[in-house]
Length: 186
Image 1: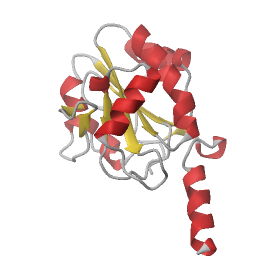
Image 2: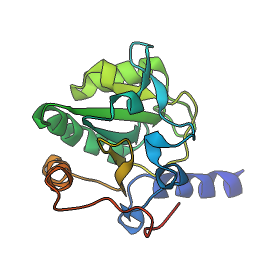
Image 3: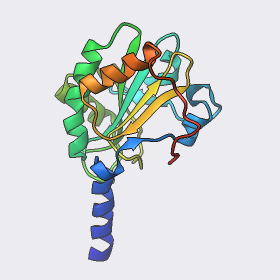
Image 4: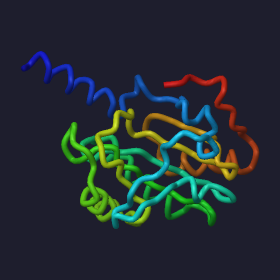
């Protein structure tokens, strides 16, 4: 049993904000066009149990999504920065948190988990979503969907509120352009 538990725990901790695995990368969904693609992936339920498709809010505004899990200390450390960014975000920017796992490693996030996360971190329950099954994402993870519905930025690792604001502003002002074709895919 130890042979199974120890590697599983090591994998879980590796997927929770290590410096070695941080950086910009893109998924097949991103490369296929993000919200403009025919691939599924944006609809989830919020802390109130209401269905939310973040892609419905892309265009003309921006959508920022941070993926987190209740069991991950890096996600808990990231949450206050998401809250500050959400409060300072310009009009037309929607900020969401998607819980990919519950409070214990290997458990799916639930509506109750989303409600508790929103309450504990001062977030709008309508903007805290849960996947409903244990996710396999490396977290924390950030996704910026541009006004055209495409992925403009995806990053694994910690970002403070100022970094999130600066990235959004760089894209909005044209100082940085999205180009996901030449970047690593996971």
